Length: 92
Image (tube, rainbow, N blue to C red; front, side, top):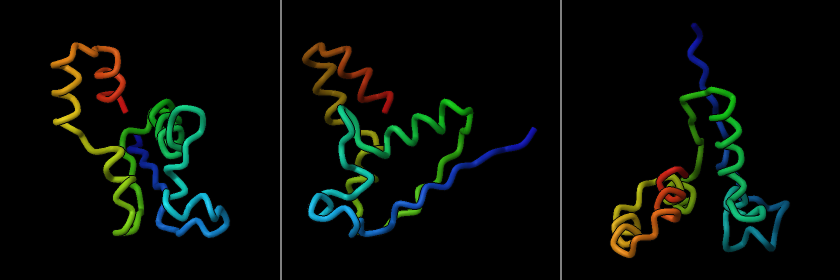
């Protein structure tokens, strides 16, 4: 069995998408209800790939924050009995 990995390069500045990317990294631009990068990761996971590597830049904290666990947010949603939102946050 092969161990497939996905590599997503997201380090560029997104100059072709200015002025939209002046404040938001291009991969975090929303498409309907999710950032662009989330759709890409969802497709990779749906294809059965378990390991995903994002090649990013040190200044792109938004990308890291998007995929990082937010314990404070999860605790708040749990406290306020927002189960559907909690499940959505935990699955992304």
